[in-house]
Amino acid sequence: MRKSFDGLCGIVHGAMGKSPMSGDVYIFINKTRNRIKLLRWESGGFVLFYKRLEKGTFELPARPQTGISSSIDYSELVMLVTGISLEHARKRRRFLPQNTVDKLTFKCND
Image (cartoon, rainbow, N blue to C red; front, side):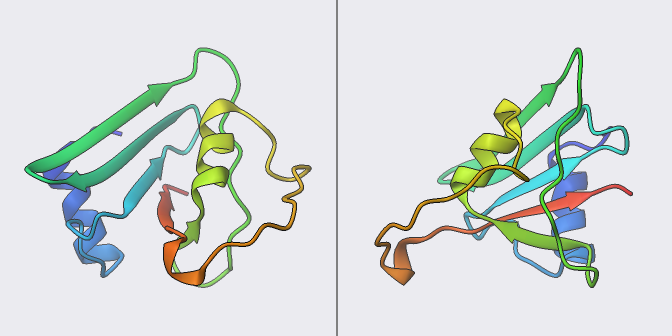
């Protein structure tokens, strides 16, 4: 969790093969899962959010076995950051046009 803007952009571009300036939110979680960083490009520059838990851990979303990254939607991100268990949460059906659903990408340092 020592990396800042440039180091995290390097991970997004090099390891994930994505563009850090795409507008997506890139999520980085440390091994002990008590710190999280969110990197996002907004007009004019990067924004970096950082949260350290004093007690407890962040629950990792279920992810496929292949690759180092996967996508989650905004509601899952909110639950992850606020400490709501993703395993037992149930999402109710809603109408969402396919083009308006944003995806977020996360990386875990295993």
